[in-house]
Length: 117
Image (tube, rainbow, N blue to C red; front, side, top):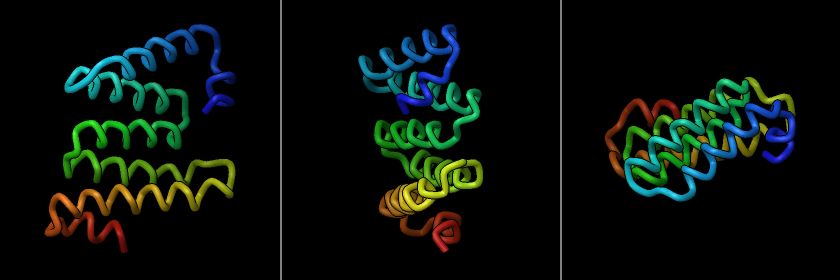
């Protein structure tokens, strides 16, 4: 992620540092909102792989079926856009882990079961 941060222009880097500080210093719903901002920031920077990491942090913070499922979908989606083929297995494994956590909360979620297949 450091390489991605260094690739940002000065204004974007300043904005990112602000989002990062806020998301690390807060808790509860406020933290979730800033983690959502981090996800959106990296989406706008065309880095869905990094956005996925922050989607997973949202799920860790909320521990809801919906957020774990969303994080899994984000990791799976980002595989198509990664420039480094060596990164793909880690993205797939992260997607699987998020889907499994969603199923731990609701083992009857057929959408997540399908996503895992």
